[in-house]
Length: 143
Image 1 (cartoon, rainbow, N blue to C red):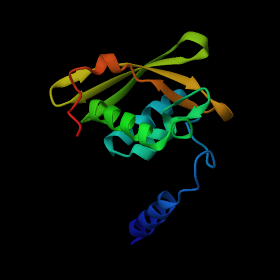
Image 2 (spheres, helix red, strand yellow):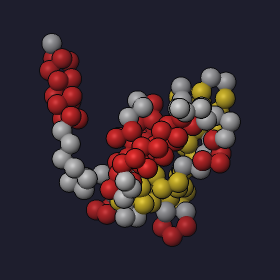
Image 3 (cartoon, one colour):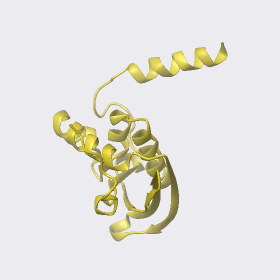
Image 4 (cartoon, rainbow, N blue to C red):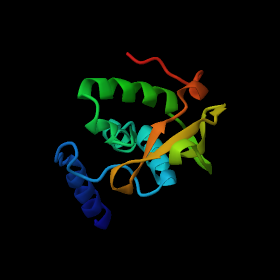
């Protein structure tokens, strides 16, 4: 019963849509942003992906029109869908960015792209570049 109450509260909290820019986006640390992004990919949750994918200006959802954002996120989701992932080493990157190796496995195929993480507004971290070129061969056709 306790699990049902918690689930109901989570569903209720997730169904509210206060609009762009009205809630905190990104993650407090670069590794957390990468992990949240990959969990959102696994859940096929474009909204959750859009709050940790962004630039120094903030979340992508606040910068792109909805149609363009959804197209990009669907393409990303098709390539980064996985059975498992591991957040690896974090290193300094250019201009204060952080670079994180993420090992992504689907079936017998494993790729290790370098995620470029960037700090945005309110000291929140975003996945700016997920090294799309490294994921070639894992992309699924989208319709």
